[in-house]
Length: 206
Length: 130
Image (cartoon, rainbow over all chains, first blue to last red; front, side):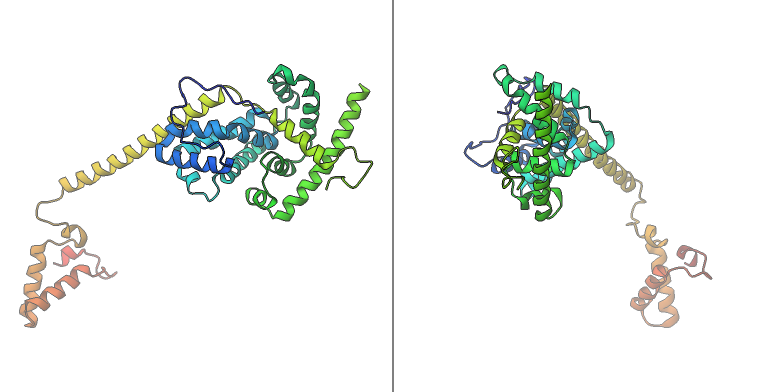
């Protein structure tokens, strides 16, 4: 499960839109975007609670760094909060939001070129609940393998596996063709399989 | 796909996707991100409102100043063509007298003079012509 951040007292959940939990995630984002348009920046907390964790997860796949990913998400959400029409007028607000985060994350990654793997791994490890410690080794290996992917492949994997998007939807976000997205995904999985096998061998040897 | 057809492959595609899915579930967000985002958005929104307020009222002030300092009864015409209505009517009267076409045509010709773009030979303003 994705752990969400603890709500801050200063920004209590006072501006939640009437949300049907059974709605698909994309529809909930659309409702939240409409609410943001109607209520202004005060309603940003609802969108944050709904989407921030998933946006950060996607951004991490691109920036390969938690801090940069959070910076990217913060920058995008602030922009959306001050100009809600950006999101509300989009055909698919969730995909539009992912696209915004992708662009911001790529810009930050290009600007900083900061890939401090060990520091980032430590963050992930220390934030895991105690009952998940046994699966932590596996998770670390997968993350190390993911970070070995070039960002164009990593983002396709993130959107396909974590967001369950089709290749056509991924192509819209990454501004490529569906065939390119599909081939990047295949290459990425093949590479991940090889990297994971190597990493597991290394771990066992140690 | 990745190596589903290869029996020696270390991972099947479904297994790999499941491992990636689980790894993604482990990503957490810093606890300070929420207040940081909301505070920054509130500040940015307030700054944006302030900027719009300042621009709007600066324009209003500028226009008010302009209107307040415009000469009474000029109707802005002298600003556009450099002549007063009285000068225009005087010129129209001259034309109507010279050409004997009546005041209406005189006014038309006077107005055309007002709107005339000064030529290189005519360096003076329209007001000077009048």
